[in-house]
Amino acid sequence: MKKIIGIVLGICYSTLVWAQSVEQIKADRSTYLWGEGKGNTLKKADSEALSDLINQITTTIESDFTLLQEEKSESEYKETVKSVIRTYSNATLTNTERIVIENEPDARVFRYMKRSEIDKIFKARKNKILEYLANAETAEEHLQIADALRYYYWSQTLLRSHPEGATIRYRDKDGEERLAATWIPLKINTLFSHLNITVSRVVPEGNFQTVELTILYNQQPVRNFDYTYWDGRDWSNIVSAKDGRGIAELPALADATHLRVKGEYIFDGEATVDAELKDVINRLDVVPFRSCYIEAYPTQQTSMVGQETVVTGSEEQSQPQAERVASFFKSVSDSERYLPVVKKVEKAIRERNYEGLQSCFTPEGYSMFNRLIRYGRARIVGTPDYRLVKCDDGIFCRSLPLSFHFENNNRTFVEDVVFDFSKDAKIQGLSFGLSQAALADIVSKTGWSERSRMILIRFLENYKTAYALKRLDYIESIFAEDALIIVGTVLKKQTVTERQVTINRPYIRFTRQTKEQYIKRLRSTFASNEFINLRFADNVIRKSADKGEIYGVQIRQDYFSSNYGDSGYLFLMVDLNNPDKPIIHVRAWQPEKDPDFGLIDLPSFTI
Image (tube, rainbow, N blue to C red):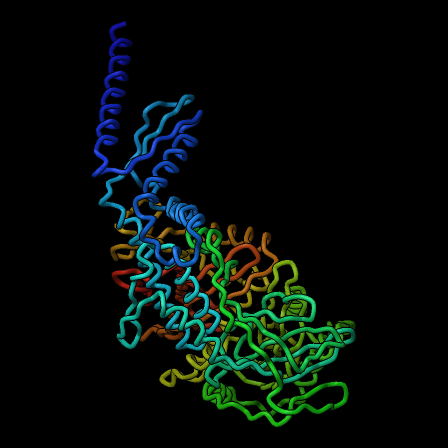
């Protein structure tokens, strides 16, 4: 009995202490902001308490959102600010202090914070705005126009959700301080104004016609650019152009020599990578940029050749990267054995008639070809400029440009397909080629042997393609049984638990997966996605000084799938001493650069 009385008295005393603390906080309005909620569960009561707290924060700082004030009427403004403040609740506000006054089923929860802490709520978002702007400048410099537009617009969206949005400044790559609120729209409009889209070829195909586009930025082929086009009835699905090449599909009777193109800049689908960003995009109106509408015409008069409309008189643009790559891929003379095979495949794809094609392939090659055709509604883009290349005992044919269309997910991708031949001139494998810029990065490593560079290109193209064609067997074969597979999470403070691997660096945590766990997760990902597409940029590749063909490959990777997208930094440590049997010893992924040491790289590991 004494024990029971003691417990009851303890509970009463604890409740009295909390009640006293809550009343003191409520009374000190100059120091604290607070909210209180009730419900039959703690979760519901806590949600009400946070909502009440958000109302107080809104009242305190609503006059600071001057960017939103310019957009909204007086009646809409307060509700918009309140809605924007809620986008912070998923991360920051849940870390406010919480007191449970009453437990379930008559739960009462009290949430509070010091007024002096308000600035800290918005600091993380400001840092993200500045990081996106840095990413945008880098992407623009590398002619990754889709990425540049995406990061500029995302930074503008977050800027509108920040109470200091009208005063935040950014130091650009030239060292100039820019007022972000006026500089970002200027940059987006400038990007669109420097784009030049022309109709290079029109190919009739039954009831429709394929329009091939040349897309330049400052007179250079874009590395990437996403767009839709008006087909006479509606705006099309999103097309992802590559290396200055894009396509459009129009009804047969449409005027294909005049096309209205709309550059994509919102990228709300890819915003799922960041729940906070996605929440802000959903709550704020889209900012219209009229400059995103671009008229595409032939560069000069067109003439009819057979059933095709071919643009004449257009001058070839200077492409130093393409020339560097072309000089590296020296053609072999034994073309009569291989080119007829590739042209037979090309003809089958154009006519969508694959009967009798199996004889062109080895069994594994034919299986990959079937996966390729199923990957998306494949169409040939332009006239292929085939180049046969030798590497060790193998012959490769570069390349057949194809577009892949995914109706259910409103996406079209353009890829260059590379054919890998067996010794008896059958196609034993296919891969998606790297971009011209990525290839140029590798072939410029003149300190490495030609063979080393060719082997590395082959590996990266096979790796990229394996994810697109969902080749789980191949991916499983290239990872070492004891491979270190790690996913990085940037922390304010380093925390180490039993399930983490630390590489002697502060501020970053690496969660380790076994090969079995990684493959199991990948199998589930493949099963739940209509498509997967990897886009590589900013290659930094190091070669081991004394271990032969062992490389540290550091790549900025954009990952697109039908239900998920993200951007981050991929690191692979791969042994290519046997090029036919590559072995990945380390795969690491970081969502961003660590504030202390940057990116995981080859020196982080002992070989």
